[in-house]
Length: 546
Image (cartoon, rainbow, N blue to C red; front, side):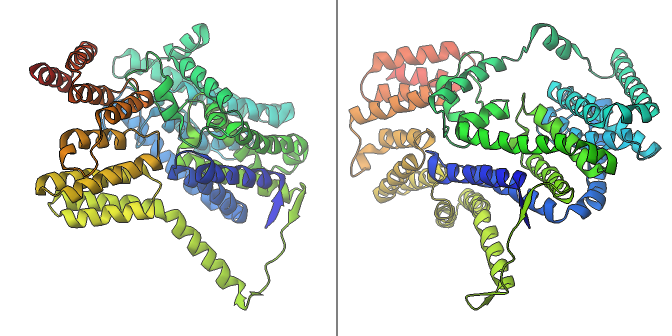
């Protein structure tokens, strides 16, 4: 094992992310642990197994990407193969077309670079056109940006001499891409599918039309409020709920759609700085070793650099670094780049070998124990999720005791995850009401309160606590006063001022404390804003009748 500038910056970045998640952030999100561990484990695995990955591993990856590309083409050509509902844009097995576009680019860019550098024949050429066609089915502007960025990087890095030497291949790629574009245009002209470049031309002519600048503006505001350490991993959703503006009042946004802005907001300038330092180490050494790389035809290095360039460009307008398998792929490519630089003589420091024995124990045993312990720790969030899911299953099958038991296991495994308190509190409240057991209602109240302590920005525990005191306050040992009820519901409104659920609870609380006129007025406002919302209509009838 060797320590290089790239690995040092990466370790520093991942360590800061872990510290942020575990100690700095006011909330806890297990995804932050997986973010750092996924990136670091993929990087280490690629560094240690670079030879296998650049040969057998890349062939397997290319085959998988080719199958995904075929799936995407079938969806677009026929309208079949959608897992959920049909769409004019291909999805393959992913949630959004943009994730599919990033995935395809991580395969397309290395294959394209491989062909343009004079390697491969008709098979590689055909695979390139297949992946390009699949990319077009996504109609993703971020995907096109990633493709263009990767091509520009390749042209710049390869240089004029390489382009002239492989001019016939460049001409073949250009002709093939134009032919694919012509087919798509013709197929859409026949009315067999929906495809156009209008969004791309509109963006180039008039700028972005998806209102993302509103999201970026709110993110910038948060960055200046929390400049150095940020607001905590994946806390943008909470921040946005408080500050969101039209046209996003009815939407719950979790991503800034610019990973660099989101990183600066959630990890502060310190986190963004370490990430950029890692990129500077990568591209700085690419410039330094460019001539040697081209002279030695270091294909793994060039192909990997082209791939990550496309993903880094796409991250300017989307959130690929928040998708686990894309993050892992980035880590693998980064590990290959790192090893190639070390092999070429870049500055690095060999880590000392572990002694054969330490404290009377063999180093192999210690290493295996550490790996097992680390995997067990990383598995805790997954075990908790499975436990909570099984508890919900048991509760739905009228086995309340086992349902509670498995929910308590989940809460024990992840004591800083608020949703497990929320789920267990609801079960306890329902049982207490059904069995007329005030002790269970009191326990439910305590569980909701603990959930509020764990995550003060999550409103679910607060809303359920309010409902508990409104409906069963007379059975509780310490029922909330009317002043407490109003204080709590105003706190919920401050956290999610535009939430329908919060507004409905606000109306119910006003009615509960005797402010009937105000409750009716607020209910009418809610119905006016949501005329098709039946629950709001029923709430208005309820408070009006009272």
